[in-house]
Amino acid sequence: MSTDLSVTVDDGIALIEMRRPPANHFDEALIGRIVEAALELDHTPGCRVIVLASEGRHFCAGADFGGGEFARDHVDAAERLYRRAVELFDVRTPIVAAVQGTAVGGGLGLACAADFRVADADTRFVANFARLGFHQGFGVSVTLPELIGRQAATDMLLTGRRVGGEEAFRLGLADRLAAPGRLRETAHRLAAEIAASAPLAVRSIRATLRGDLAERVRKALDHELAEQKIHWATRDSAEGILASLQRRAPVFTGE
Image 1 (cartoon, rainbow, N blue to C red):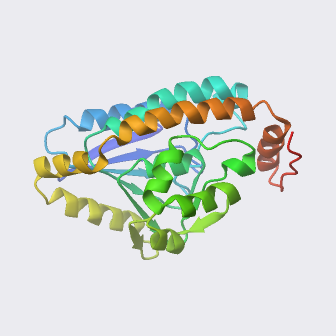
Image 2 (image 1 turned 120 degrees about the vertical axis):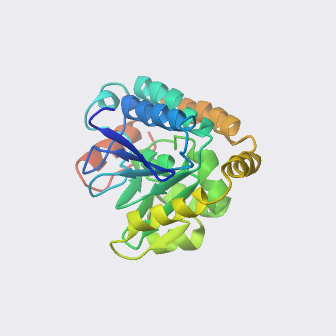
Image 3 (image 1 turned 90 degrees about the vertical axis):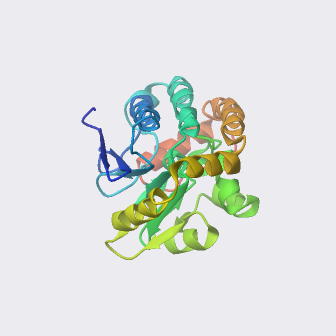
């Protein structure tokens, strides 16, 4: 396994940990390694649940528009990323995301791709796409309203505001609210509860409840990318991304 991702399995629970602190920005390569690890764990004897976590201060800040492949070519990088990301929804093993710090933009999308999210009072979920001047991605068009309802999802997406752990728990975006310093432990406890159930039944129940989720996400990603291509060519998107990198409020003109 690469240095920016580790995978361990213990007592039926696999830990997939991103190791790009502090922000754990992703790209096609990292998402691809997460997908490959999860799909391999589907066929690993004794693995019943996956905990998706990250090293450092934050869970995931999404794509890095200040450097790497996204800085060079938004469209090409997003096309390649989404082709890999959609495979997460083909994974058959339940996934629990331990979300510390912030899950921003595509990082929110990654958290929403899990079956469960564990947060604490300091966790922040942020759908900041409109504040960057472009349409949401990473399948958030499907996953976020499915988790918290259309109205609450619309609120998050149009305002780009930060949703703290306690509010996320009330909305249903977080499934468990951990005590301070107990987030990873709480995520592991939830995973252990799932692992204690009959594994064949768990996968069958999960598949029934998810239904055509993977197909709906695939269709949504096509639409999201088409919209993003349009917006990334606008002045507002250039301003939104630059303002984010400069840590200032954006000034949008509708151009």
